[in-house]
Image (cartoon, rainbow, N blue to C red; front, side, top):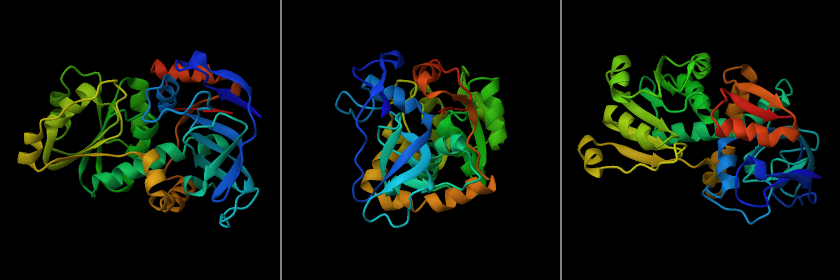
Length: 320
């Protein structure tokens, strides 16, 4: 089968399109014939060797797929050959076929396009887990970094669904449009020279910060976090891992928690699988909407990843 292979650590142009053996489908797994692949920022970290895990070279990157189930392993009675499905995988998604554990597979309604389905599992699975980690309640005020990105935009929609207030931090006007379309109540520029001052203009307090950026965003937004506030760390897209002064958290009864969707899929798969039915219902009802801005041919993966690397994308890119 065709697949994009990472043969050496590096950037998008180091990837090679070639042939690899078909995957083996074992117990507790299903095989999916891939119709569409979601393109994620985490793939850039994976192929550069800077992700939390480093697969053995060579490997096939790609974390998010949608298609039809073609094989069903033992113990997977809830799935049938021909089911429309989307899945998260650690890697292997940029290929004609992929095998995934059933906890990471969600049935997709027939009314949903493969492109939208391919932009669904990682972003909404990660966002839903992050909000659980935050212990979010209705009426609270939430600052979301990277609010037009894959996970950020999903967080905006799900925070609004839970009845909380969203302050979306975005980098430009195109990304502002996406955040507003997702339901953001207020917009603040993530390029601000004084993020604390800009946040003070739109909110008197902040209860939760969703942070996929790290660096100065973490440090500056933290200054607005109120008593009992929580920060959920999703990653460090800025490339800078911030440090914290623990005494501030002690005095203000605050907390910082990590939220790793990929690791939770391994450590607590039942927690993840329990989330899929409701999220799929919301997808079918139009309550959540993956913001696919570009659909590109499978052969254009390096160009698609380069757009993400250069931060020239508002919304999701999907390979068809």
